[in-house]
Amino acid sequence: MARGTIAVRAVGLLASGLLAGLILLGSTGLWAAGGVGTGPEAGGQEAPSLTVGVPYLTNRTLAGSEANGVSYGAGRGTPRFGRCEVQFAPIPVVAELAASVPFYVPSETKRVRLDEQPDESAFWDDLVTTVAQTRTGALVLFIHGYSNELERACRMAAELQRALDGDAVVLLLSWPSSGRPLEYARDQAAVEWSVPWIAETLAALGRRLGPDKTHVLAHSLGSRGIIFALHWLAAGQVGAPAIAELVLLAPDFDAQAFAAHVPRLLPMVRAITVYASENDAPLKVSQQLHGLPRLGQGGELRTPIAGVETVDVTPAMRYQVLGHEYFYRHPLVLADLQRLLVSGARAGARPGLRAGEQEGLPYWEIRGTPPDRPAAGDRPRAQTP
Image (cartoon, rainbow, N blue to C red):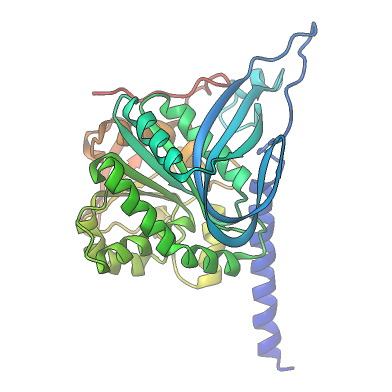
C-alpha cells in the first residue's frame, strides 16, 4: 500500500478516535448522571427533587414498552408522540461545591421516564392548550444534535423547560441519532432522511399555533435538519414566514455554505441567531474531518453574515469540558437565550452583549465571566417586558 494512502487513513482514524473520545465524555456519565435515583442525605432525609415534563415527537423505532415507560432505538420509524419526564435531584455535598466554583460540575441526578401518547389528536390538543396557558403563548421546538439517544435529548429539553418555566413550552423533536460517537456519517444521513418529517412538523405547528408563536432551537448537527426543512417548505410554496425565531446553537454546518443559504431562509423566518464559540472542541474536530470551518465556531473563525445575528460566546470561556453544550450549561449564555426567546429583543437591545464588527458586518460577544452558580433547581430567569 502506498505511503500516502496509509497516511491519509491514519489521519482519518486519528480524527475519528479524537471525535469519539470528545463526544463520549459528553454523552456518558461524566456529567449526564441520568438514570440515578435520589438518595438519602445525612440524617436519613431525601434530597428535594423536581420533575419536569416535556412533550416529544420522534421518528425513531419503538424498542420496548413496559410498566415503567417506553424506550426507543436508533432505527428509522414512523412518527410517534409522547411525554418525557425528568426528575432532578441534588447530589448532597456536590451541589454545595458546584455553586462555589466558576466551571460546570454535575450537581444533580436526572432520571428519565418516557410515556407514549397513542392518540395523535389528543397529543396536539393537549399541546395547544398547554402553550396557550404560558405567559408568552409560544412554543420552542428543540432539535438535538449528533450522538444523542432520546433520553439524553430529554435531559437537555427538560433543562431548557426548567429555565423557561412558565414563559413557553419546549417541544422535543428527536430524529434517529444512534447515540454512538463513531457513527457520525450515519447520524448525518439520519437527520437528512428526517427532513420531510421536520418540515411537516413545522407546517403542523404553524397551522395550530401560528408561525409567530413557533420558535426553533437546533443544536449541532440538528441544524442541518431545520435548514433543509425550511428549504423544503419554501419549495412547496408554504406561506412565509414558517416560524418566528430560528436559533442555531453551536451549528455543525459549513459556514460558507450557510451564507449561501441565508437569502432563501430569511423569508421563512422572523429572525436568525447563531451562537458560536472558539472553545467548542467537537466543532474543531468536525472542522478537521470536513476540512472547512463550521458555522458554530467563534473567535478567529467567526463568520458574521448579513441578516443573521451572530453571538460569539468565546469570552465567557469554556465553562464545561467540551464547550459544546454551553447553551443550557453556561449561566451567561442561558440567560441571553432566555431573553431572546421570552422578549424577542434583538442582540443590540439585550444586556450582557458587546457589539463588534468584522469586515464591515456586525456581531456580538458575551461579556463578563460566569457568575456564582445558582443552587440546583434555581436557573436564571429572563424578565418578560
